View 1 (cartoon, rainbow, N blue to C red):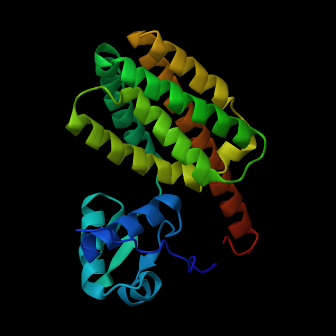
View 2 (view 1 turned 90 degrees about the vertical axis):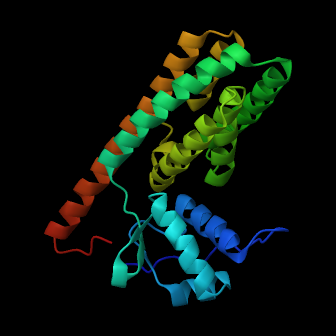
Length: 247
């Protein structure tokens, strides 16, 4: 089995931020991006070397991540990055879709001209990122940033801080699964067209169409991810039966 990546996001402690908060942000970002891999044991000593921070802030950060469902706290066994599970992803997608539909409904009812400008700007960047991905660009960070900003812009006028906070948590959990998959790079979907239809419905203030298109967009992601994980599971099983190292 290959060793987990030895890299880490540098700690960036802003004014007024504690070391625990900085460690939390860096670890969370690396778990979402897959730098800290699913199932990886998070040993305090090793993390302290990687992130250049003491054990106490790291333990406190890991406890917060455990409460968010990104890290498993195993008592004396320490901490482990939560493994990916397709049943959990399907459940996440149900909750995410329900929140997104309501946030879209409120946003389309309340959005003003400034909100529309934000939607148009995010859609422009999304169109460029989709085109780059379709053209073979391997910078998934760039696409994920544009994708997050695009969907956030659609719901930005919903008026509920709690709704947006819960939505962000679910978005980040789903991003872990997307980044662990290769389906985005296979060109199996016209993501540009999907995003284009969503923004057209949003700007037309067509609540039902915007919600239905977004739900179908998320459902297609879930279907592709399920197929990708099933394929890799079958490949791993076949390699194991041949006596090969499945890693």
